[in-house]
Length: 225
Image (cartoon, rainbow, N blue to C red):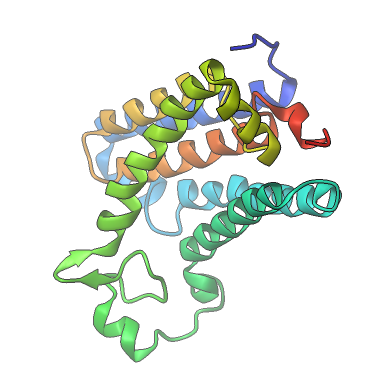
């Protein structure tokens, strides 16, 4: 993979991510009450900060679509539309589609089937198990592993695969981004608490934002492929 000096923005984001994660880990060891009731609580600091990379991802992808979609192919359009809508969906879920901001009442269906009595999908209970665990944990982990390990390997070794990925301008992670994602994943478990998942969501969102903003194949966006 190519080596490239980190930009100022990348250094700032990386610093923020790992400082906030270390604060969370130390807090979980030293002051568990503050960690649970202030730092990673619902609508708390970490959850609010997580909204920032999700909003940037949504806006960035729509800007890329507006700027390049007419010059590119359908794969490019689908790639960035999927990322934009996916980021917007997760952002909407995080704020329960405005319920946490405007305070409207939970509808009857979600009162009966949502574990947190909120208007969101990821906390629905299906067959006695949280949908969040079925899809947003198990399936997501497998998808992330493919994205961070399999795709970069194939991109570097298979010219045909590389050509297809570049035609779609599908963002491929740089080596430092892969390492950063793995560190975020590992550090989130050092809280020894299930709420460490909040740190994982924050760090993962920020790292994915960096991948989309500055992927290994960034030049392919503006090329006529």
